[in-house]
Length: 287
Ligand code: SPV
Ligand code: MG
Image 1 (tube, rainbow, N blue to C red):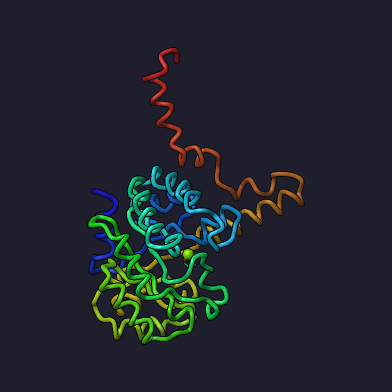
Image 2 (image 1 turned 120 degrees about the vertical axis):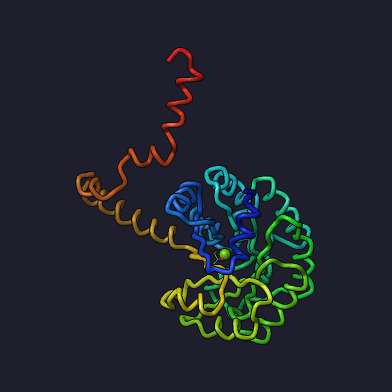
């Protein structure tokens, strides 16, 4: 099944679905292997893993190169965190074209201004996009196959429920496939208030990074379609790498880390070393 179709099915299913963050091909493979049906290509995680900030410091083609490795390495759909679409409608529709060529299933764009800032950094100071301009961008990005998720940042910027609803409705009318409603509260009050008014107009996507203690069952009851666990592979790997590097540095030896890290055999398995060994039997006649 085409990856766009798979993603469309995930978003429109009447069950609560979950996708997990990846920031490179290795983490994407792991997400697929543990059983997730889809991947969130997080802007925060990809930028951090490239050693830059979540402020569009990495160019969109640099992000595309990462995505190409991720897509080649997996068979489940990838939803790209496309930030603001890297410019105006014209930049955004060119992004879609290049993503489609690489079998990326969909993109999420947020109604802020390029270059964006992460939603959890000084949210109240972040300007929102003009609604009409953003609707034009959605229309330009929409293709019958490609999935476009529109992210409403009204709560992040402190504009409240009415603004969030007004924007979500405008984006619906512009043809978006789903609304991502974002909140930086540590409870789900904003999300609940939005869901009550929104009803079933379009599938709703959430990112419960800050309200992580709200039980997933609650999201099900609210009628949320898709939960994104947005940055947890990145954060887990930072902790693991810091601890391992510190230990080796202070011990001047590997003796205390070897039992706790992944065996080399597992690394080779993740790289599918076996496939190459088999191919060599067929194609490298001298072997
Ligand atoms: C990301 O993962 O980059 C996101 C989600 O956009 S958040 O960091 O919550 O804004
Ligand atoms: Mg992001």
